[in-house]
Image (cartoon, rainbow, N blue to C red; front, side, top):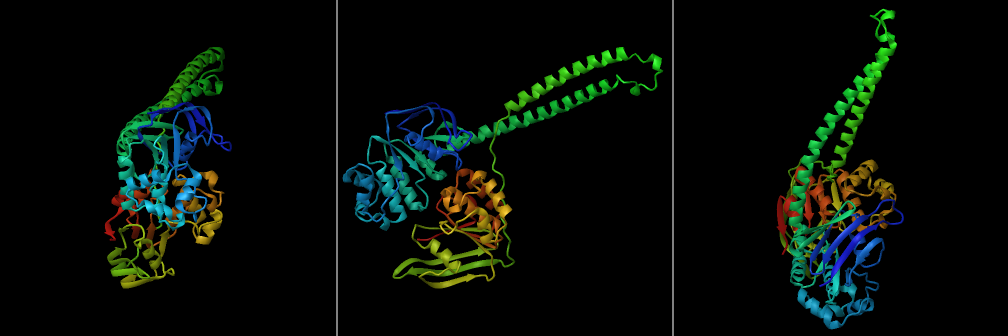
Length: 498
């Protein structure tokens, strides 16, 4: 096995004044199954591109490994899948079929055009491609977005049983826990290596943060005490300085007032006080240097307006069919004016279609059964796709009739970079577009929320903010999600489609 050795490595983009990474030193074994985690925009994809030699910085990245990357860009989706992939990377058909068999996927799908494959099939084919060369080291960037629970479990099994090491970027905690044995955590401009899966890292980090918070609290108390001491010394010094003047000795005859003696005494006191103040300020500075910067998630708010009706949505024995294809049947659920109901099921089972039906959007599905939605409800919809969102944030807020200042404040809390406030939505990254869509839904007043896969493209930091908010508010919500940790944390009831 080979290693990836990184020494004294720093990197920043030309249009930025601060480093993304500063003086990295890492020694990574290629047999390790590494999870790469960190906040959106902190450099996860940048780090993978540095390893691939797509970017360069100062310092050393040394390895004999060849890297494969997921996902490659599909240039002609109408091409036969096998031919399209072979046009971009060198491999034999049997190598791709071998990996698809290991994944439990019918290898004959490679003879379909790429655009006719389902989203899950496309993901699996591209992941299999990254392992066709047994001597390459796979860099896997966000493989679980939009995958249903069954597909995620299939991918977990594939990666667990694979002998090769890799670096995996994901925000799905359950997925990381099952597929990694080491964690690379981007913290500020550094990358720290932890042994164990995500749960082990989280436990270590929580203990470290608790220790640092207690230390910070003690240091703040000491700094406050020293600051008060410095203020008292300064006041004493100023008082002695005033003693030099006769106006402060009016009870003494002029002849008894010895300006030289009093001035000399005041100067000595002043000098001693200044030295004491300088010494105290030095101690304050030293204490401040010992403070640890602990990044905390600011609390989010949502403009939930509880409706006076107890039942907002009631579905009984509902069946949806698309032509002759039945999507689901016998669906029964009730949403009250408080409480989150999660709707779970495989991709293509009709979950998103149901949301479009509730929004009274034109669909070609046939429905039977009872579907009652309280009239006059203000509904906030968080879609999977943001293709309809475009233009500047200010124009977007006007179009959506939401408060522009509240939108920006919510984005700031979500860690959205301020320098991107002026970027058109269609030119933002998927993670940034997702936060815009989420901020919109949080800001607009609503009695009922229809959220379609909110955890996708959100880092763990943002997910925790959202989980904390939903637990506290318990809004009326129909939630579609595949991230099992997120579902378990926020749902008051769970409905599964079969």
